[in-house]
Length: 549
Image (cartoon, rainbow, N blue to C red; front, side):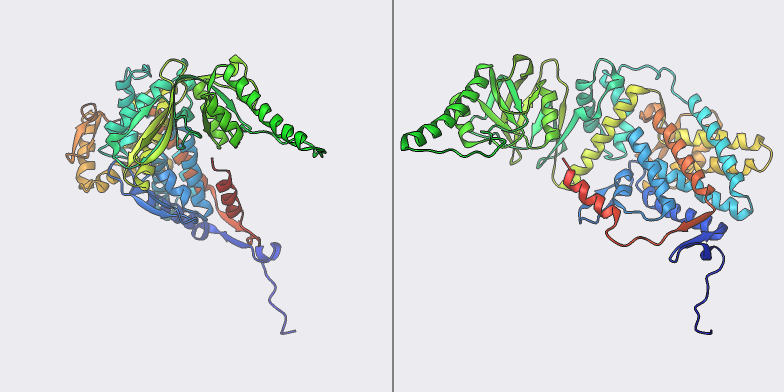
């Protein structure tokens, strides 16, 4: 009987072989907090205008050089379940506002770090959660009091007002170039802003990245920029009607297979002629409808192209169905499935469509200067792909901020002024509390100090001096005192014009606090043995790569 293997006992005897079970403060709670702290340490150094870049190489060997937290956490394949909760909070923030993902992760990490200190002092996680919940409700109240008066209403078509709200979001990605980028993005957004601004669609501002030149060569096109050449020899059309065919411009094969018996050479000659005549008839019908440009979503036959040239019709090919839909929106056209005579209502219109060469790349530019313009494109120029990708992220942040301000235009002081004011008022609130909650509320207030500390550290300033100066200023009633990173001193944000959107701060606070409380609520982790076979993430990545437009 000695040779018998040891029987599992406890919870292991209940579970299948290969399960892992972690419980208790040390094994589950503290381990979870440490994983989240590691993640927030990675993103924290990228916070603010002086944030450092990260170089991430993903599983497909693609290189990312960026300080955009959303991109960083997307490309890091994070396995730890608790750290994944923080990633989900950052993704929620990115989808809701499009900016502030770094603040969400870093703040949640800071809250958990302070919670660890409280746990080591002897507080129970549920007492900490209760204190944090009270603190976040109070913080939202205080945040509403800090809103700049008069910012509730704004004209979303006034470029200066838009830039003042957008500058902080863009500067955190491209410090020093925010003026140029904000001006470009504001123009592009205002052009495509619908009558009811709350219906603003982010997809209507496109980005075309062309290598060469510098940011100062960037411009805006009212319309679309396609990275392809026109098919055929006609390269330019002015004030043209456009016909769009999704299925391609070619002679179609019949649905069923058929056999044709030809008895003489004459019949063979006539058979070839009928095909030619049929194609000519179709192209002629399109030309007679007034269309001067044909856009095809599929292949373009040699014979069809020959007749298009004869009837002086310009031909474009757009193989991506998403791009084809956008082109239809730009020109106001309806896509036909197969080559046929389009009705006048289905034809689109463009002011000009031309093939141009920008920095050695041949592009087709469809412009629509007059009314009815629903898409505008920001043409970005830069010396390397990494720089262009980073510029695109800055533009995306700007466009998302514009969407957020269309829904809620309220602003609060930026440059860590809001955070210090929240910290100060929450500390006063904690002192008035009785019971164990006060310790958690006090730690919650302390967590806000990471923003000025990180901003100062990333800019190479003395963080302790800066935080002390901010507390002194806010204590004497100056609620708008923030950090001026260029001069390394504390200044009123109404002078430096650094404003943050109220919505960005509000959602970041909520998501970070929810994520931190969710991690603290976990007291046991039970992990199954991973199944064999291909991993789900790998299969998804392969599928996503194939569907990329």
